[in-house]
Length: 155
Length: 114
Image (cartoon, rainbow over all chains, first blue to last red; front, side, top):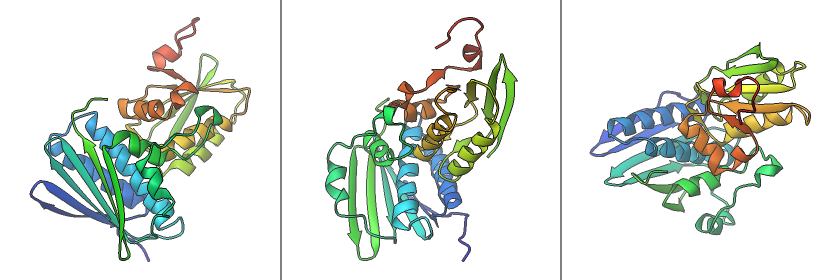
């Protein structure tokens, strides 16, 4: 089945909800749309770039691990800006995150030694570096990941 | 994925014409880099100034592009936007590549611009 590539959008109050396919171009369209919304909300650099990195890494994880390389599914992202906090709430219906990952997310994640010239393994590290808080829970068949960023921190 | 390559000062200059190097194009980027760098040039300089976003898949593809050059050839990067530079800095991959502010620094004659 061909997945819809144009994200569907709800805007209400000071939040934005986007629904899209986990296929790479669906992800790309959603990221662009959220970035434009952040720009309209007056979120400036480097915060917009940070949010874009965090969102891209979280959505890549969903495409690669939750739905897996050979499948696509729906993803919903809700973005809420409250003062200095930007909250990204991401839901998908793929596989649950392995329980072995939970404690890792709450402790300091190391990035690969650059000298090893790794081509991957940076995603969660980047998310942790750029967020204030990470929370995940499984609700029925839905994965719910919440990421919060502090705006105006510089960096 | 569009890459343009030309010779400059004895080096191969590869310009990335896409604005995003992300999961959607990472494999294509790596493959296209292999094709355009199939030349005898020892020094390869990548102009990244048009890229406004690169995620960890894109970073992995740049690392892969360097590795496929082999141990005797060098990949240098130029013109990283602030967001792209941040991905390199946070992952400390900025310690692995020679990174130039822009092409004029990369091709400053006679001195090591790094």
